[in-house]
View (cartoon, helix red, strand yellow):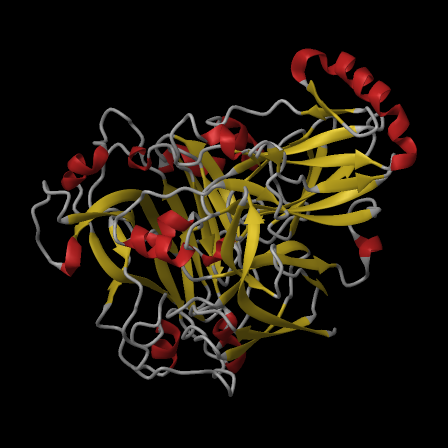
Length: 587
Ligand code: C2O
């Protein structure tokens, strides 16, 4: 196995979109950032040089960091953030994954522009894919474009202000021609294809706020992997992908040659109804020039087979016509539910059948008193802040002390400030009945929440079942729940309230998909199982940036095993420790 080395220089540059220059924070002057391409089993060494004004960490999303929690990149959870004009080297192996993962900054909101693909090919080369070898492999990174000062937005959100929106969505950094300013359309991302060839799209949702539907007019996808684990080939005309998830899909260029829009539609952004469709971005799949003459006929032929479903749009330079796909509705959550429920593992993973711990985690919103006070007038919204919660506790980042991993490893402090994550919510109610759940900040007074650095400790090797229950309080949001350091078996998901007696019988213990990010359906639940066998301190959180910043997070501590090869080794020699001195290092 090789050592793949990269240098990531984080700096700021101006990027022009929508007639406006915006100062953004990027790696190596690229947006999206550089892709890391490796073979399974390789080691990766990334020297991060921080030339930005912010404190930064990078998280290698989905990489297990086996016995290597020190490289997980969560500020004040696993490491002290890298200060401006400082460097840090991340070193890790990638074992047990094939497909697509990604990397991103793990400081509030900066992942909008600090992210890139992590591509993992099989040890025996592309010919050992469990599907026909593609002609080309193409990362498709869906993201947001912001014209705001993102760390400031994150800070505001943490303090209860919500008056901000992205300016648009992007595919590989391009907004696409549905966005324009003064009549000049933004560029489309263009994928050139040759007729008859197969393309492997490595789709990543790097967006902060939205699940997306991805379609290509006139083409179908065959999904072959999710979260860098192979799935049974699944043919669909639409991919549903939540923030944090990755999907590998084959596309065969088997349409009559022409131009076909690739559309990414945000399907449930927390935005007013009327605004959401405007965030739709589109790229173009374009058959190679030699064939584009027949494009007009090709498109016309397609029109007749697809009837009114797909519309002709916009004439290309050579007079051919681009075809746009018919998209699901932007509040259609069912299509996403079915997409995710249809995934099964290609290889039967070994799912442990004996379970040691059961956690029932209710995802919700609540309110806490401002300024850390214990009591306040709940009816006065100036005195309270809206927070996102797990079992009614909103995660308090450990700011003014020592990173939790360091405290855990050296057995120093940190514990007093921590509170155990309860296995159950404080009270039981009907979670998804819209009539029973109070809405709005005023009524939130009914759900006083607490703020704490919540942790849950697991004995090494414990088999843990977790049910994530969504609630009506979330008002239409699904929740992509991400666990660091471990993969999860997605056993089942459903709509409505989880009912153990009935729903446990539906658990897929044979070929459940193996995921690092599990989408809990809107007004529904998801049941997962994982083996807590990677010693360290691991973050577990919703991958919507606003839910994360508002506290929908917890920390899992996995204890050491009894042997050296089941225990967390000491930190790398150059690891910057705090020993109680890292005050106010978060952006
Ligand atoms: Cu992709 Cu903790 O994040």
